[in-house]
Image (cartoon, rainbow, N blue to C red; front, side, top):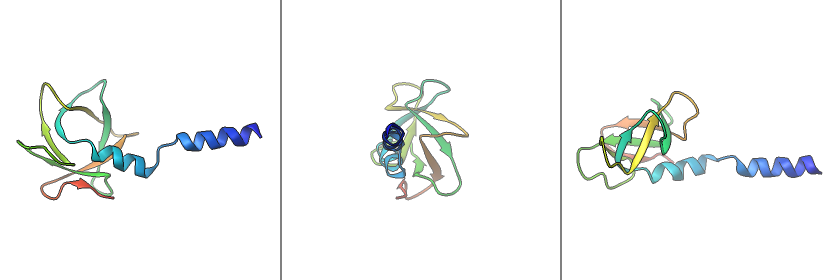
Length: 99
């Protein structure tokens, strides 16, 4: 019985694909790339991203529009090769969540 309870609690604690997508939707605005202490760890992929990201120079006001800055960011992002919080794909048009 204890094992079953533990397994149920463990499964509830695992992030689902929907959690990753909702997390990815809220990341837009001024972004700073950092090597340590990020708000999010992000993996750049060529297919099946959680978020399509467009690099912009002004008005990063919707999901997937990122303006890169060196100071006063809205979010700090670390680019990783494994175990990301969500995956992104660079695009030149139609940014936003894929699901």
